[in-house]
Amino acid sequence: MRNDLTGCQQCAQPRNRKKPFKIVEHACRSHRNWFTRRGVSDAPENNQLSPGLYIVATPIGNLGDITMRAADILARCDAIACEDTRVTQKLIRHLGITRPLWRYDDHSAESDRAHLLEKMRDQAIALVSDAGTPLVSDPGYRLVKEAQEAGIAVTSLPGPSAPVMALTLSGMPNDRFLFAGFLPPKEKARRDILIELSPVRATLVFFETAPRLLKSLDTIGDSLPGREVAVARELTKRFEECRRGTAEELTAYYTAHPPKGEIVLLIGPPLQDDKPDDTDIDALLSEAMAEMKTSQAAGSVAKATGLDRKMLYTRAMELKGR
Image 1 (cartoon, helix red, strand yellow):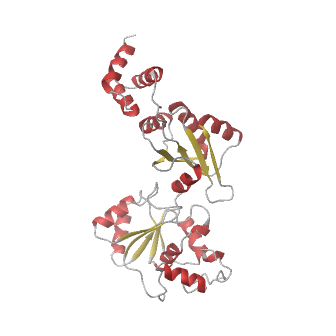
Image 2 (tube, rainbow, N blue to C red):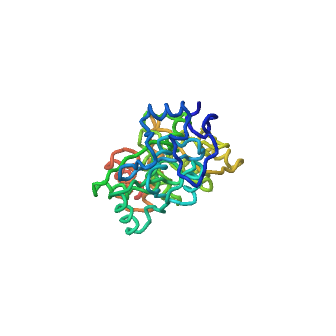
Image 3 (cartoon, rainbow, N blue to C red):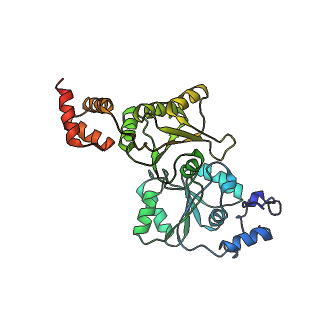
């Protein structure tokens, strides 16, 4: 027996898509037992969920990754707030669910957020993103914060997450990791964030787009030389791939094989002896001083390397006097 209803030979039957998906009622005996053990209600359709906000993780590519609890909540909620109604419509159509869809993201007007908050006082509202877990580089932060401040019940349903899946596939150290969202599109900002995070003794995890991958790999190779890097793309889909190597090796590969799809980029932690030598320090100070005052340059390099600021300032003044 598979854990998704659509893959069960006993209960994956064509459904009337004009009616809401009554997920427990459509289950075979084995799936009914699966629901019962996990606390999913077998109540009749008119048994409504408690009012509040339900944060629901959705598949990142393979629709079979929807959890049974997520499908149950989406089937029984009063409405679904989503990034893109077209994307969410495909998911609920796959599940045989019919529910009102309200577009919402963090750029929505305050009146839209106020409307949702008001609805949550007496209705169950599900929040989904286009893919994965909401609020993880996706909309929802302001809505959740204001709902909690207003005393509205908020709960979250765990499920698919691209950063976590990529970490488990990468072969990188996973005892400590830092997820930092999307790398900036501009070269200087990208370099600055990599230098800022370079002393962190953890695997760094970023989102990236296929058109910008080669530029980001070049920046990583320049800013964090010698670090191990992994590119995970098309996760859970037919052409899923996770490739590991140096930034230079991956640049060569993806130059010859242009990437497609959504990408998670991982950078290994610094080695224990990964401290800049005098040449590296001079290069970092010179680059920083070209864009800021000497004292600011020393502070920036100190923050990036963990070295003493006064020592760096003294060296910066020597370089400036040459």
